[in-house]
Length: 181
Ligand SMILES: [Zn+2]
Ligand SMILES: [Zn+2]
Image 1 (cartoon, rainbow, N blue to C red):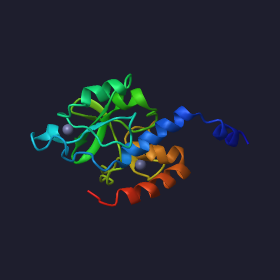
Image 2 (image 1 turned 180 degrees about the vertical axis):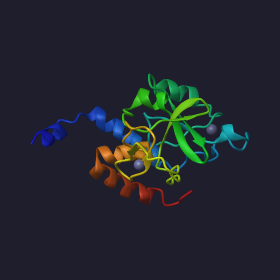
Image 3 (image 1 turned 60 degrees about the vertical axis):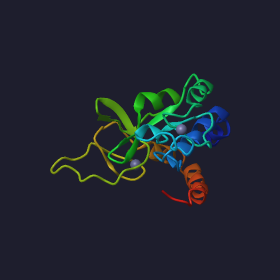
C-alpha cells in the first residue's frame, strides 16, 4: 500500500515538529505566573507566554525571564513562539506558527488586525441565523467561515492528520496534566 510506505518513510524532522506541537497544545503552564519572576514583578508580562519549540518539555518563559533572549537565540531561526489570549482562548499569530510548522487548512481569524489561529477547539459558537457555514472542522464538526479550512484549531489538525498518534499522546498528557488549571 502506498500509504504504508509513506508512513514508514516519514522523516524524523516531521516527527519532531509534531511532537513539539503536541506539547504546545497540551502544555499546562500557559498564562500562569512565572515562578522565577513573579516575586519581583507583577502584571501581564509576568505570565508565561513564550514557548520554546527546541525544548518542548521545558516550562515556558515570561516577559521578564532573564533567559528569554538566550532561549530565543538557541531556538533560532524559528525563535520562541509567543502565545496570546483572545477571550480566554489561546491563540498564536498565524505567521509566527507558519514559520515553524505546517498550518495548512486551519481556520484563521482576524483579531485586533492580526491573523491568528486557535491552539485548541473552542466551545461551538452559535451559528449565525440563516447562514450556512461554508465548511466544518473534519475532526469535531465545528462550523468554519472559510470554505477552504478543514480544522478549527491546531489541535484538531494534529488529530486529523494522525488520529492514532493524537490519541496516544493525549492519554499520556492527561496523566501529566493531573494538577489541572
Ligand atoms: Zn520569568
Ligand atoms: Zn476542530
